[in-house]
Amino acid sequence: MRRSDALDLEEGVFKKRSAREIALSLKRSAEASRRRKAEPFRSAMSMLTFHINRGGRNLSPERRRVLNQAKDELRAVFGREAREARE
Image (cartoon, rainbow, N blue to C red; front, side, top):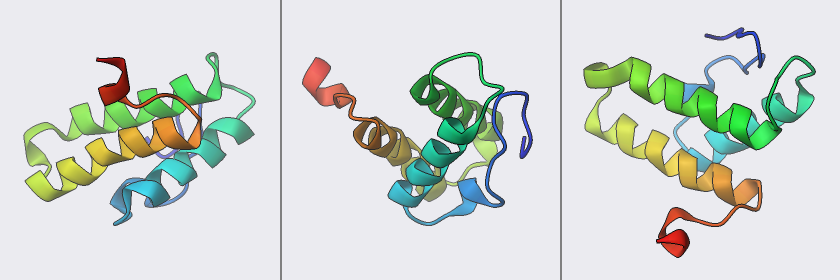
């Protein structure tokens, strides 16, 4: 997963402690990629969601919480509205 068809990810991006650091790293990777098929936001969110789904039951509750917070941070760094505001 470190090297997908769409994004070249920073080493250990999903192991970072901060949701914001994860989001910023994914943003940098998505914006730098010339192979992605979708816009940078969608590519970054897709990679994050894929990692969460792939981890499944093997993710600790704390890790899952940080990764889900990274989704909100990703929306923020791309200037998208938060999930709560849409509901």
